[in-house]
Image: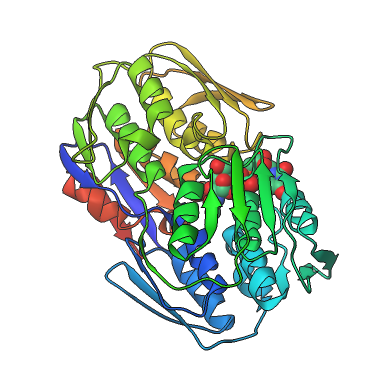
Length: 420
Ligand code: EPU
């Protein structure tokens, strides 16, 4: 298993953001809706993408993936089983359920189970697809779904923690081939959902309202292949904002969509950063303060502050003057990074869905272990500011979601090395 050795670094320069993993994954699942050829550009080369490629291949697709361009072709397969050995490594595989149901009329997708960021139920996915007329049962760890004919309906997708991104994706993908009209209420508004909506429209779907809580769909008989470019990864861009703040380095973030990051700018500015945005040239210039100010952060569904940046900003706040509070409202148990940051000298107390972060003078390098994708990014942020060097193990987590992370950091001047 690979490890990172990281030492305290001062960075400077520009970094280019890759395509969004969380936009690319449901779009890849949506190719199951057509026998046409789909050409998807700006797909990041990541472990989760490779897993989704394997799932689509098991389901009968022929795929090539070179230079961030993914070409998906079909052999008119009627395969409908997404096996546990693949699904267990990546929850997003569950969003094959909707398109398989719509196209093949049945689907058998392994239940993804829990994960270190807390319980991850699928009740909203099942509720939404059942509302479109599917018969769904859960047996022996698999979700089995069948529908001779999906029928449009009014589907309410609000849950105890707000909307659900992948449940919205699943229902959208099933409804575009259902008979009649569907109205999804309390839909997720994340840019990744808008990107999926745009892709479905390119495929010929009649869909509007994506990006708002009310999505309207008129079912079509069939969809065509298309060409599409995946949006830039807002979470990767936000991670580099955290890197800039923590290390006190001026960084220019390129190929970003500033419009997707207002809540993050708001927090960064409260922490004392100067953020300059150039929408036309897709650039974000981050000038950090000499000393970060303590802030309170609440994670919320989009356009609120993303849970996927909570860990990285917590790592920054260990350096702040004063006491900060983080309220995790999406995944109340997503705090695996707290213990590891404390091993590096941070003063963080977790209580329920809150973390209280007391700014400390210095973090100390240590041997730490990544527990999940965003927690591993937080340890990288901490490793870049800690005295002495740190060794981060289990970095396969970071490889799931950050394309060429150490090359990008090295280019900015970071002292980071991957060892086998
Ligand atoms: N929820 C339910 N019932 C459901 C589904 C979700 O109660 O049927 C709850 C969840 O437990 C959670 C909340 O709703 O409390 C939101 O979960 P959501 O369904 O939106 O999460 P997701 O769609 O499974 C995606 C991203 C996650 C990101 C979340 C929230 C992908 C592939 N994954 O997951 O990304 O944290 O939305 O924004 O898009 C990551 O990239 O590190 C990551 C975990």
